[in-house]
Length: 197
Image (cartoon, rainbow, N blue to C red):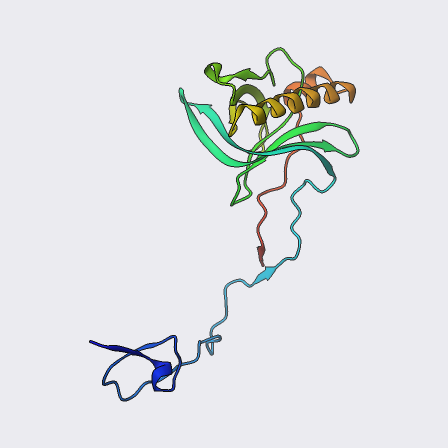
């Protein structure tokens, strides 16, 4: 079988034609169907609010986040690990959104505490840090054990310094001990470019 393009016989070049086809119909793409009414219409937004608009980004680096659940480390997502300082309260929080979906994977206040937000190397690795935090990624405060892995030890070192500086800033901002265990500004839901009506 020999295929000819429609442009070879004077038609649309995107449609292949078999040799010997005498009749070829080019149909226009159907954009509307008479009598059909969509269940919902979608609106494209120019800007989507993420909950980060009133915050100052102190640190951002692409990394991989893990969460310890059911006796094993499970990958939570890859994205930019951010330390964000609230413009009014001065609180600094850790936030990581999954790269493609923008879903919040980790969201907690960074504090200086014996139990929470104490960075430790994971199994002696200088590219990965482990800590426990009262996380608000899924709206309710839950104690989670996280591990954040970086491409190299230099990037991990920068994160450790920024994380410890953020804890010191929160202490200066007057985050109270009871707030340290349970407070974090909830992040906005995952950003979506379209809205259902």
